[in-house]
Image 1 (cartoon, rainbow, N blue to C red):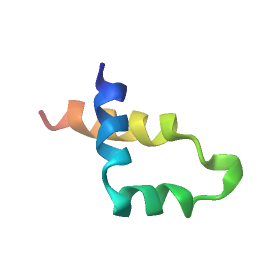
Image 2 (cartoon, rainbow, N blue to C red):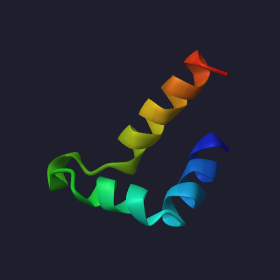
Image 3 (cartoon, rainbow, N blue to C red):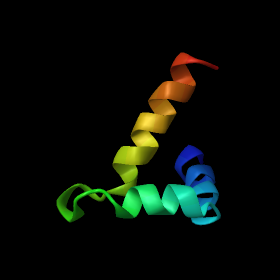
Length: 45
């Protein structure tokens, strides 16, 4: 459910999409971004 919510947020945010698309193609995995965001949110509820 967390990744679904993050996906919708990123899809509606041009700045986040741009950041994701500027990563090297071999590292361009939204799941890595979502995992990092999820870790940050869990550490700072």
